[in-house]
Image 1 (cartoon, rainbow, N blue to C red):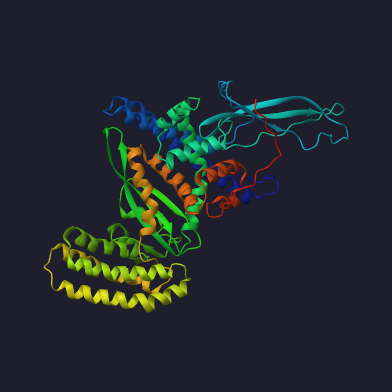
Image 2: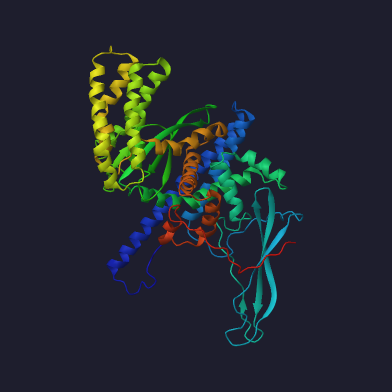
Length: 516
């Protein structure tokens, strides 16, 4: 609670205001803890109740992973919401020592100076050693962090380097091992039970429940970074949006239902390359309005590039400008030509080809030059296409496949042609569809998402990893560095770790390492 250190200087009115604020903050924290504790109990009950349901062994394993991840995340959130405990009040569980046969690399932490403030030379009287499990693909090693103790014989001053903060406080995994687990799960689509087998072949079996705890805790720690990425994404004047189905388990029913991963990203013309995924249990348009914060003072008011899904329609009534996807319109005619060798489809494809030829020529131009090129070369083609569509519609019967393809473009023509008058708008929504494709490819390995919390955790991790990828970074190297720096990064400078701003640090030689 943020109360002034010196209360004696405050007036009665000011004291009452401080007490009111402290009570409100305490009530908020108590409510948050009760909510998280209730959710924690629900997940525990689901985990044990699911054993009696008709799941396959593989499905039950994935469900257990999800529950363990959720429980670890909830434990971290409850810990963050509670008042700080006094030093020594919380007893730490004793862990089994790491296997002796693993190679060890010593990292020594010594004071910069061993001369006491009184001028005497200090003597080394001992050391504290902590071990962390490290991993590079295929090989486990152990980092031995040795912190020497130095004391002055004259004034008995004791000096020792402090324990460096870690993304998982007092945990055994290094940032590299945590990054490996997260990248394998959320980018390479390897469930934890498969990673357990991979690690066992590399020489050390790590229980799935332990891996799940790491994933859950990392998800909580990375969330502020995802929130900052979302805030910057919503500053862009033009966004792509799309959604793809993801099966989500419904414990108690023994089956899955269709949930959705929504994808939001900047255009290829924007200075910032970013993609944010948002998991939701439904495909309802309210999910889009909530993400864009529509209906609030901070509501986004830009141009949204989408297909014809009705869920976005309410956004356009709240100030968002609709931009159509020319690729979707083209696809309707391509199906006519590919399936029925339609002459109408073939002729339409020639119009679309001419429009895309202009886009390829203008891809590297600035906004104004691209707009000028579109007005000169693309607009006459688009006008001719619209006139041709109107003429062809009079020649085909209602309800036919050709009529439906023509009606799609005619009905959405204003949105489809909007890009011609603005060089900042893309011609189609293919950019976001390319970002969402890895999710569709990974579904065969996911089988399902185990819970709403698990889906949101996956969305958060994939937002960072895929944003790193489209900015030209190695996602593993990026996440290693972020997990290393995040515990010391001030909240006011969290944006420095965003993928489009991140710069890899040069390796330092301040600590020596020797292999045992």
